[in-house]
Length: 185
Ligand code: NI
Image (cartoon, rainbow, N blue to C red; front, side, top):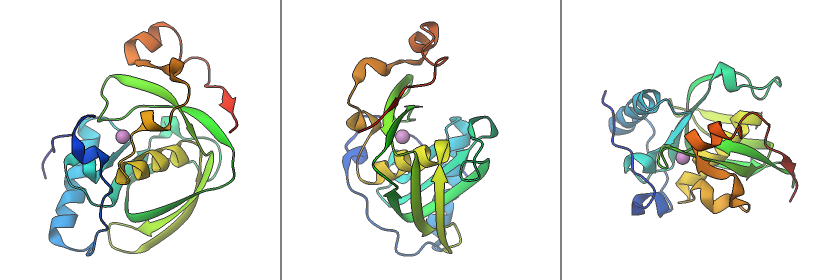
């Protein structure tokens, strides 16, 4: 396994629509998944999409750390998970602001509008079908990673840029202490 180089915002690989994985069991896909998990853990991230490591395929890895999980059954602790060729459906018109970062936008955080509940399907690392509903952090990270597969970075989802800044400055200002206000759109 190896730690992969992460593309940063501005690199064109982050702006393209990725192509589906044709054979999830192929050795190069298995190796890519193992390397992406190692890279995500090394970078202390909650998710990593293939285009972020310069591979424009529809595949991402993610996790829900115990400290980020909510109370509901659809937002519990989740170890390293893999989703190949995902389809994500936003449940309902409601959007909530959640603090997000991105390994391709290091040092920054923003409050980004996301659907609080989603339904998603795809294939797991063994090529087996997955179909789940998710809420809370789990729903947010899946929306964020799925956006990467369509060339969308979180600033492209923002409407209010007053809650966008460097992590150190936001911490100093106490921005993370108060929950991001709920918005509807
Ligand atoms: Ni990201």
